[in-house]
Image (cartoon, rainbow, N blue to C red; front, side):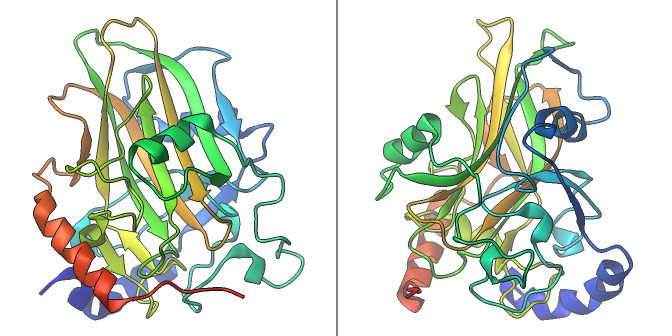
Length: 309
């Protein structure tokens, strides 16, 4: 049974848990974003020492936040501890139901709806994210509704050569959008949020990530996103020639401002690793790239891009 077929089965098992402990998000402001999010991101024994005053948060009020009780993926596909969320919309407004296959924050009733669809006050410029898109061969390097957290750090253990965290990426772009949102995990200037063949963490642009998604257009899981990944682990290798390191975590729209996406991420810690990139949380070997590419191609044949008037 593949994970798309498991959706209906796991919905029954998830129902009681989700209703008893529904996902909750507490939004942050631009002013308190870094000071609130950094402690919530770190694992309890992270071994990470944040350089004082180095934290920077970019985003509108409530675009990012802290979350608790994320239990909206099939239990057999991993668990996610409490942490932080960055989004291309308003993270604190995402419903714990799925009633719209093309939802964005502008569709909420007043006073929560915001016009235009772009995040009010959100950033429309990030040269580093644009460069990532360009190098990946994306049809556009434009970014909108950028939400980032960035800081400098050192590690307690000088033999550790990497940092790692667990995450779930949810998107309303799934399964049929040609304009995609982007998640980036940039360590010492290198983005490690990519699958084994180098494809970015989004949905389209030839991405093989379709195989990591749980289809949610029927609303089986307690969240609005039409597609949510399993719990995955991202590992970023450090530049060991440096004594102080940098990390930047980002979520953004690309090309347009329509539909939203978000990354829920937790447990950032120092570690020892041979390779950077994405793996299941048990450290297992990712599905080979050719399998992903076949799946993405088949999905491309079955869906055409939605267009909005």
